[in-house]
Image (cartoon, rainbow, N blue to C red; front, side, top):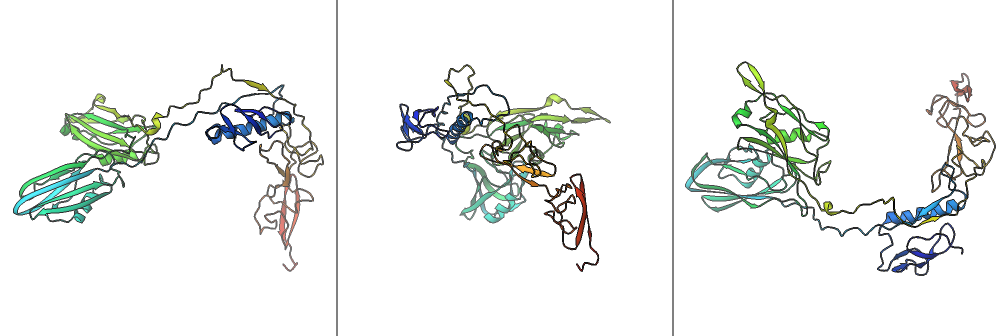
Length: 474
């Protein structure tokens, strides 16, 4: 064979538009034994990915079209060149990722004197359960905790160590709404209703954590002022994230109310909000999760303050609250295993990569040869009019022409057919065309006159008119 340009990594190849490599460059070997494409000597296919392989296939087609006078781009070309492709580097080794967070576990312990009694309550992230009797089972404790809007899915077990002491293990499953993932605040224990209590403690036995190789992005909305003063504020403020803003929220909003407002935005997926009041600052910490839609993976856009109408009552008038007291902090950038992938494609316009000038035959547009070119609207392999594609290779009125090959519609044979229902009756082909494709009105969905009807008129400029035939027995 006469050789044409070979694949990168190939030294000698057979000719034609679908050449096969016969001799590979150093460090390469034939994938087919004696003929085929080249691959690295360690067995990996040259290019290391399917996209690069497809690029080589496209290059082969390009070379063949140029040599055969069929590289029809729609522009006048004088010559054509091809730059040698360089295979992309092998992707970095995959980072092991179980994608499973560690669920937090907390141990609640109560101990009393003989004859103790009464009730206690449990709080999490600003919300408290109904009163629980010291004798209540694990099932009742579970039901009370899951009734809180701040608690998602949990598992509860109770262990009675003595007649006057027991412990309750609360394990978060990282499911539900909210997800309760990562390190969580400790459960609060209110024992004011327990008589003869000796002690009551809460211990984080297993701290919650994100999946391996991940951290959560966290931001906090902060409002400066003493709690009582902040609770007295009137008006509210909105929060914005990636061009969408919440409805107005108040300065006394709970963690759940703030989470609900933010979650209503289309730009926010799964989040959790924790509220704290300390050191004359009220903070709503927003934790972004990857589990929702959209997923929040890696660093996130900063939440911004939208409109604020916060004001403090004073005598009979309101004084606007200082805007300096309301701010948003970026507390933690989220990270993921993907952040370490620094592979990027660099286009070097000054590259000295070898270029090859291809054998190029200019395209000749021939109407009626059965190969549509960019200068033709159709080509049905003849130059006869009245069949949908005219003698000048234009689509005729009332017709539609389609063609398709591996390169699209250019270079392919057109098939033309009348357009039924367009209100243009093609003579000798359509029996009628009443400008719709609904059967039962005299002209069927395939533009044929239906039994019991007669259709009159109809041309390339006017639709048919159909009516029932009286006296025909139908």
